[in-house]
Length: 222
Image (cartoon, rainbow, N blue to C red; front, side, top):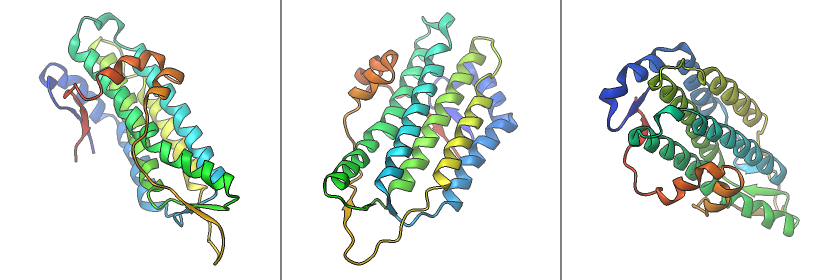
């Protein structure tokens, strides 16, 4: 894998190259890809397990958002850097919170109906993509640090965060549902992102207004 910037990368390519050359970035990718390959839950989950994972992802996204907000303060007049920060926030809002709303609702329905499991075949994909958005935010923070002349200080943090999320996810193997057992279906659709911006990352509120406006998106490329 690797990291690139859709526009303006000629100005910061040395920083991108430095991040991509880091063994830590390769290890970050390995955490995510390893979980994608080796984690094979049943697709039916205990409501408490979903709730726990949602909490982990929200907390880690908030921390990653704080990292992005903290960097590049000497570059506030640089619209390119500002747009990268907005996009990193928007990507996490979409990946962690938009999709997470469906699982929150499914858990609420399960609890209300005393159902023992949630049918959530897309939950693995949700977790993997949330992890990628969090890792991308930390890499963005590191690249912006580099643009400002600072070391790539967030990569080790990203690795430890992704390792902890992967370990927590791997412990959730799902459940085997018996005939006649109460099950609630999770409908994985986008939800409201405003509450997250206010509660968990008030500094990211501007990202909501810019959500559909910025094309300077950081992408993973093979």
